[in-house]
Length: 231
Image 1 (cartoon, one colour):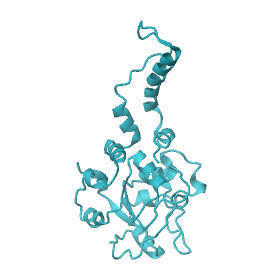
Image 2 (cartoon, rainbow, N blue to C red):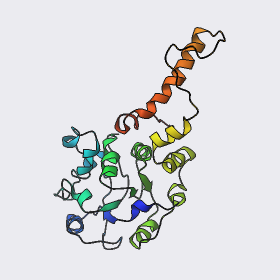
Image 3 (spheres, rainbow, N blue to C red):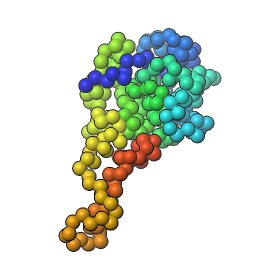
Image 4 (tube, rainbow, N blue to C red):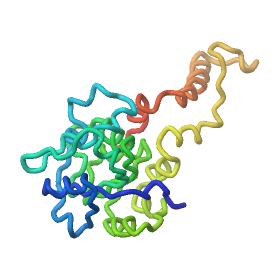
């Protein structure tokens, strides 16, 4: 299944501020004309402390406003959303720094649906998975996206572990959970569900399994980051 949300512009986080400014002015670069890409783009640059008073879709106004390139911070409020970018391209160790979930959340709500980098920090990548934000180290995708080729989800998850691939195919952790919890029955606390005698431990376990299904209704922002941990 191809991803239709990649029919937009590609933003190259170049190590030269003038090249980022030219993209914000409407120019489309290529991998070769973007020159050297910024390494070590941190979560503190994607969503600096000053924007963390926002916790919902409004974060989509702010991705990369803390990005420092040389002596400049070339990206301002609403620049990503208003310029139609859907893919971000960067260098090594993307998403380093603090493990804040705000960063991929801000990118996703600004219209970014794929981040391509030479390497990623593990926690950033897992947070992106949970939101349904694709990440890839395959730079051959860049030219294909710019040519307007459809990109199949199979290609984007081919190198990922089984759980990450399943979450991304579902569109994020909450949709994955909703699909895989359909068999869980929700009963009122204390309700008698059958006439078979049970121990206190069995009764408690039964109630917990039922109430766990209610988590599907929790808002995306307050649940996506705490429901999945892997070594």
